Image 1 (cartoon, helix red, strand yellow):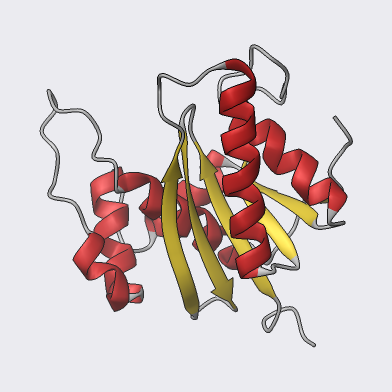
Image 2: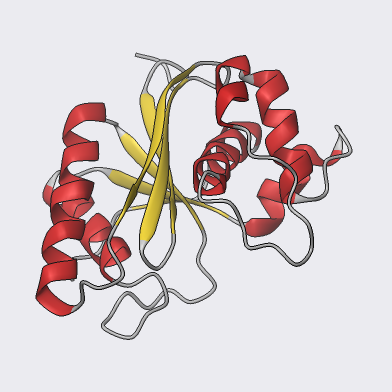
Amino acid sequence: MTRHERPILAIDVRRSRFGYALFEGPARLLDWGASAIPRHLNGRAAVGMAQKRVATVLQNCRPTAVVLRHPRRMRIGRNSTPGPILKELFRETTDRSILVHFVSREATQNAFRGGRANTKDEMAEALTQIFPELLTRLPPKRKTWQTEPQAMVVFDAVATGFAYWQQGGTDDQAPEKT
């Protein structure tokens, strides 16, 4: 099986939600979606729900690798920004012996520079031209005073996967036990 045939799962993690995109090669998007942890849950309840959602995505997608945007802080403890989702993601990838690949924020931006996409809205629009199946999920351009649309987490995951393929799939790292 060549590198382009292996399914990779790109995930964008936020504090209370994550978006994912399953790729089979650089031009084939197989699946995408998002999952949220309700804000009223905290502690063990949030961790339990995060574990179930992450495990479900990993089991359904069966990736050979997981691709994440390199976080600003690598801490995945109790007070880390992405919270229980990232912690459970690392635990599940470790348990399943799935490699984790990191894509820097700069690599993601550079993957879109040729198409003159500089903002998140422009990148999302460029992704719909590459993957027309995403067109129905494209949120309207947001105004500066508006909050980011919930659907943008999916486009961020797709952008992370796209950047991974553009840079040749480097920066492998085995997940550490937490």
